[in-house]
Length: 369
Image (cartoon, rainbow, N blue to C red; front, side, top):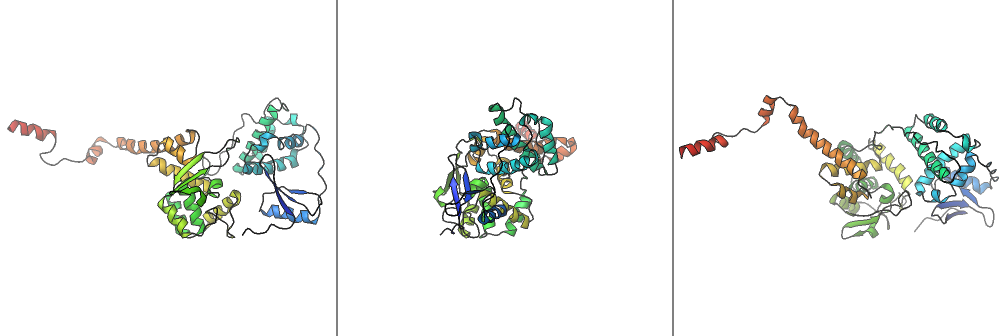
């Protein structure tokens, strides 16, 4: 049975599909909780709300950055974003409003945005999240004619510490190390096998369960597209390693992956939990890095672009081409490396025919006939 909800905590879904949590005692005022559900910050807000409603925030002055951000977060463009994206950008905007909320919107220039990125340069991921959030906001602001020019245009993302392609792709040695640390039957191993052998993103991996399986095949529609479009329907056979992992592990009623309390995961909390499992195994990887490792393995073994698109739910061939090109490049390099050898070494590497074999033997046979 589901665990009872704490007193006076209420959940509501807006007409745009966003989930809102608030505290309300009896018929008293509703106090909205802004932090991500289940986090320490969320429960701190919850406890503070129980002690009394805060004073209403002062309305932002018209045409300031804070005023425009408030309008943006009540727009259809904001509602079309995935819940996880909204939560991530909300954190960015809270910090921006604290430092520059009273600045007139027209005074925000490319230099302002670049300076904000550079202040976060020691943590490239945070710097890029800031830039992505401001890109989305100013694209909306230009469309709404609040500004004439998008100041984020031409400002590039920083290259992170992982690699030029984003998340670190697991190596075979790291895969082996994780399996050695987390044997079959552990929740950590089931999460690993589900991510690696299905190619599902973490948001889909925490949703998949027995109801998605028929005749040994998982059929699930992936999460909503970032632009509000429906996700892709993917069909993935349950491979023997994953089947063994599911059979050996205690799973939930509706989802294979569950928390220690037996409840389904929220994808952000799952991501943090899985990172901790990776740390304990001595692996620098992440859930998304496993997806990349699977795509790399499939491409190196000859998977076509269309096959990769079918497995990973990509609606275009752009990502598939990235993996097939890399695999083709590696194969070509291995073959071409032999051409670097000197002629003598090349001949030594060629198989030698036995006595009487080859074309010259055939000529001698004909001359004797």
